[in-house]
Image (cartoon, rainbow, N blue to C red):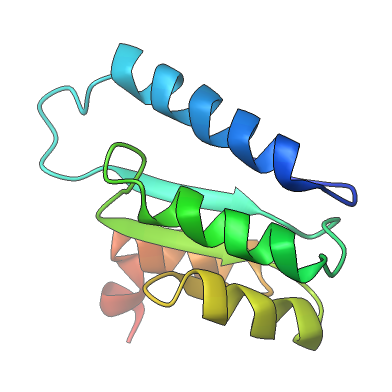
Length: 109
């Protein structure tokens, strides 16, 4: 999933609804875990109410995946995301994020 632009609380709510609806239609399908990759490379630092809204989205059990990776470039957004999504791993490199999500970083070590 890719997020971009400066948000308000309304997009957070719509994102939560859209994700819940999408994931309800697409069950894990025999796999033990669902993986989440969130591309926030073009997502700017957000106002604090939006960060709080993102924390609510992240905490939604319907949306949650077993492993979640976030891609971002900036230190300040990384700090916001660590606060909103403490159980998500944050990466600057897509390849590293995918390797961590799929467990292939273990094979490379």
